[in-house]
Amino acid sequence: MSQFFYNDGGRKDAGFKGDTGDCVTRAIAIVTGKPYQEVYDRIFELAKESPRNGVHKKVYKPYIEKELSLVWTPTMGIGTGCTVHLVGDELPKGKLIVRTSKHLTAMIDGVIHDTYDPSRGGTRCVYGYWKMPSYNIENDPAWKALFN
Picture 1 (cartoon, rainbow, N blue to C red):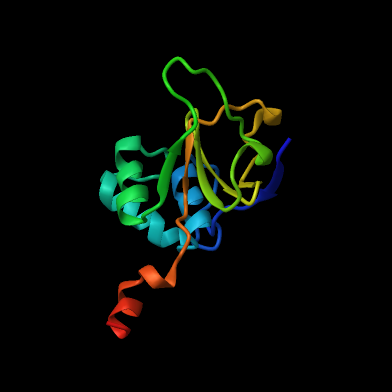
Picture 2: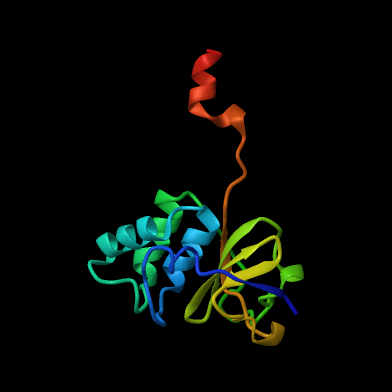
């Protein structure tokens, strides 16, 4: 079973109250370190509606991949069945946004960061995950400009 750490991604500090379906906003804020309100506002702008009641994949996928530059790794394909579960030892270390059925959750070094434990006792299947790319200063355009 995975370890679980309660983390609302800064939702309460941003002034939001009550229960909500904000898993997309929360997971992005936790993994990227961006303020919850900033992520919420950007998703609202892209979706043209409140992200409090869920966000469609066609909205969050391009935001995560193109704007935030996280890298997608699928863990399940058509006809493959469940091969990876939402447990720390079945996913890589690092900062991940993990996609499961009707939910995104954050996982940092094998620990689930969310407002509840969505692992279903280690049986929940993972469709895939986005990972923060590792930073290499030698690939940074500003660094390259200094030495060219």
